[in-house]
Image (cartoon, rainbow, N blue to C red):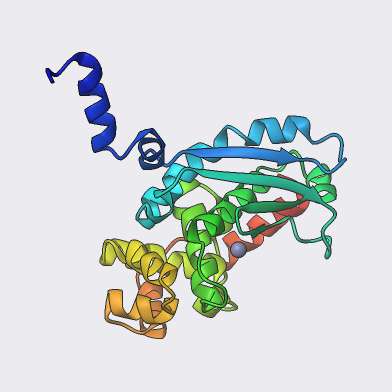
Amino acid sequence: MPLTRRSLLAAAIAARGGVGDARAQDCALTVEVDYNGWVGLDAWTEELEPKLPVWWRSINDALGRTACATAKTIRLEFYRIKPDSVAAAARGDKVLINAPYVLANRGNPDMFRMIAHELVHIAQAYPQAIGPAWVTEGIADYVRYYVLFPDDPGRAFDPGQEDWREGYSPAAGLLAWAETKWPGTLAAVNSAMRKGDKGDAALAAATGTEPELLWRSYLRSAPAAASAARRRAYWEGLKRGA
Ligand SMILES: [Zn+2]
């Protein structure tokens, strides 16, 4: 059969594994929203929605594109979540969002960034009970603070009060430093955890060093994020709704 333009196109699609897989390689994300009867959230959600597919690609680029094997659909679902101080939580491919919290903090850019953190958890998709939590939360905040929003003041931590065991911003700083010293560390740890390996063991394998020693080396590099004053300023800003 002679190669026509149409058969060439079909061959190209077949080589890429079909139309669906071509979308998956692009790391496509579809977003569904369920307000569950909550009103007054449309403008906030409409501003958020187009950001999510862009963040999804960046998250997966940072973590080795392990969550791009299939095109992904996620759901944003609004509830009243207890305790009141919880903004959002990821459950499988859903982001559960605390509607009263959003209604009270709509103008705060931190709200969108918290959703970005939850989106990282969807990309992680680690088997239940794979931890430790400090690595899981450290990776989520690494992507938030060092990939998506490098100007986010929330990356600051108080080195006199917090260390890597906290997860979140201290662990994010540690992981960002490790990634610059041993490029590919984040992708290696993420891939190992998706397969069911423990994150601290995977980090030690990728860097050849235990977390406490990594932490001390990281602090010796005098990172700007290790600042009690910057941490205080961030919390003050949050309280003001800045
Ligand atoms: Zn988290």
